[in-house]
Length: 232
Image (tube, rainbow, N blue to C red; front, side, top):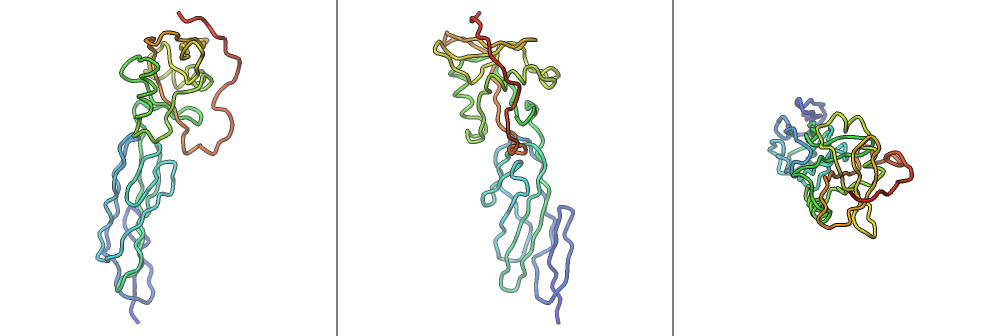
């Protein structure tokens, strides 16, 4: 009787169990570099293996990273375990490796309630400019949008905003009015107003659901009746 070794791998290196069989892929550490949320998708470098069988990959936390083939797309900050599975091949046994992938927050990101906020950049801009910019964030397929008035109010009154270096002033909301786009001014009592002039400029911060908390139901901030003030 011969012995075979089936890797039970982690990022610190494989361990083995024994049973009857033949050859196994080469022992190799499986490593993934740390990433920053907002980095572009990247391809996995497979573990070293003498087996001709292809590797397939899976992410344990799809709120942090999702995988198609060997292409990893970062979905949010956090930690996930990426598994690499190799099927059997003539003369080789199936094997698996795993490695931890750490995605650190973007320095311009705030986490508040169940939302991820991307800080304003490049100064105030017009409403049409914000819509064009938002559609291009992180490749345009990551769910980024302008915040609702209620979401924006919750942010502007939050401790996270007060402790950040985000600018004060007007911020665009997703709300629209017959007279134009609508914004909220950061203050002790944020108020909703209309920008009736197309060249009116305000800060733009963008928001999306935090995938890790996406199963949480309910509103993302305080509700209430908005008082519409004249544009000044």
